[in-house]
Amino acid sequence: MHAGYAIRAPKESELPAVVHAVNEAARSHDPTAAARTDDEFRHVWAQLDTADDVRVVTGPGGAVCGYAELSAAAAGGRIFADAYTHPAHLGAGIGTALLRWMEARAAEMAPGVPAAGDAAPVALVNHVLLDGAADRMLRARGYSRTRIHLRMRMALGGPAVAPVWPDGVGLRACDGTPEDLRRVHACVEEAFGDHWGRVSRSYEQWAGDLLHDGFDPALWLVAERRGRIVGAALCREREVEGHVAGEVGQLGVRREARRLGLGRALLLASFALFAERGAGSVGLDVDSESLTGAHLLYERAGMVTTAGIGRFELELPVADGARR
Image (spheres, rainbow, N blue to C red):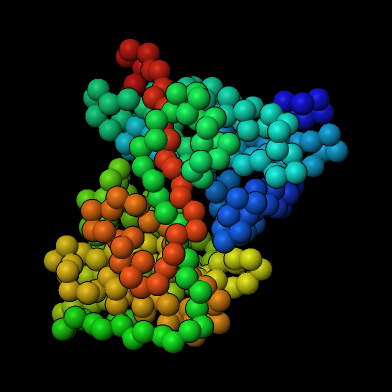
């Protein structure tokens, strides 16, 4: 890095500065990127060893201008990285320094990461916008692109299209009780079970990721048939370009209820829900190679792609006998 820059573990008091730097970095590449919140980062930091697995970069004036974190998957042999450079500090070597730290730390973590199989490798995973500096840097360091995800968005406020529900299917909001949440979890786990790279999550793992500050069960739409949850759209409110926006975090339909138009109905119901709440737009991320053709469904509903995000993986060396 250039003179005056330093990399170290973060201080708890720096969390708001980290959030600001991350949001500035994300919006500099895609203005429609949803803003991260202090509460989100508090939740993430509570699950990480910030002394070992999180780093900030400070500039000559002491301000936070770079950020990186690492987390290991519960299974599947993957360590996930996330890193950002404030746009005012591009070209100072921050991205390279953070990437080198992530690779070195991931190599230390690798022996303790649960494997996908006896002979399966452990890999470091980075998600970056396609065709940018980060994309080129990862390729130059030997990463392979394994998937492309699309960030999609649609403005609200125009004429609404009413959802058409399959026979016998009714819609309601999740009631937020432990019993209902477990039923939603079971539906989502089955709905996404055949997705590429999917790792099954226990209820406790799933709840730990989703049921924290900002969770609003009224934004979780549940489709039922004969008392069984057959589809769900797990939504939340975000802030995009200074305005309230909607986000469909997960939309899934059980195999038994597919090809009936239920996915489209849930999507349109989500649009209507956010419009009622005054949101200016609604967005989501989707696998461009989804077996269900989800991105085509979203396009037909009026959503457009605002960014392509590549998943890049680097196989990590693990000494023989070191894997647990």
